[in-house]
Picture 1 (cartoon, rainbow, N blue to C red):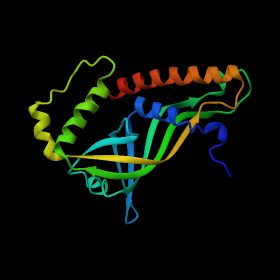
Picture 2: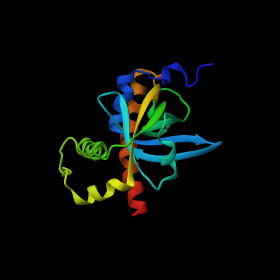
Picture 3: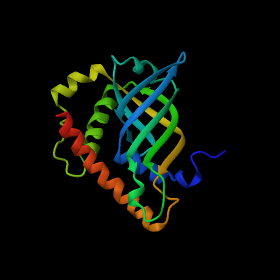
Picture 4: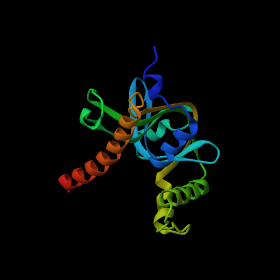
Length: 197
């Protein structure tokens, strides 16, 4: 049995990498003694095809992010409820989303110099394209934090793209669903933030 249906699977690695680069906050999952460890942190896809991350040494999950330990990584793109009212044809309510599921093995990078360089590179990546802030290699706050952070890299060995975007509908309905995904995400973010803060 194929699930999700093939039409909702996108295993083009370039599309998956684009999701990772656009939505780098990952959910990293490890299992030890049937207990899940789940941490949310940004991961950067580097030129060697690995995911690079940093974790607070006090996080209990840090102990598992080394020695080729298996991990599952989830990246989430935009998502929203799709009302039948947006379609030109009769449909049922549904939910559209973009998700990436990866599996791999993780290793710790012990070098403090590599950690420092990685934090600077990650900041540069996350500041793109305007680069309003450049992290100085001699920033004292960063240098003081290096003793409390561990760096790791993940080798990816399984890629899955789950892109449910009304691909099984007529062309105009696909276009309408795409517009709804954009509209809904903008409005939901604004409404949520206004309600919370």
